[in-house]
Length: 165
Image (cartoon, rainbow, N blue to C red):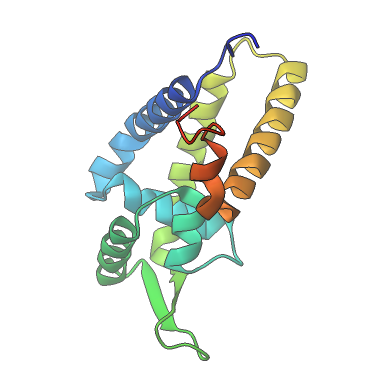
């Protein structure tokens, strides 16, 4: 079987560079408010995803650590930009609600993110963008499948003789 052109380590490195470049793009906005990038990510996520409003939702979709989300959310609550409301069925769950003072900043971050993404897509045709979208959806599906079967992953990655592939 031929070697794949794209390896897991290349994908991980590109994802890390993408995140670093995005946070560099929004750094001036974050600096102007004293917010860490994780706080900006949370505000933007809540503004763009009305039905997803818990720390768990943010962690699962944004791949942020729960401790980072909790710290950032607490700071945003103290600032008066977020409200944390207990779930009526499970008091351990907090629903995060974006408050009006946060909306102008969230909108600025959204615009900066759009401009950043436009820079990344320079010289990428519409057809190539559509191919990327299809591939990204397939990879996301595969990742979710792998995660749902995480207890069997070590066995899948072994040869019949018990040695790693």
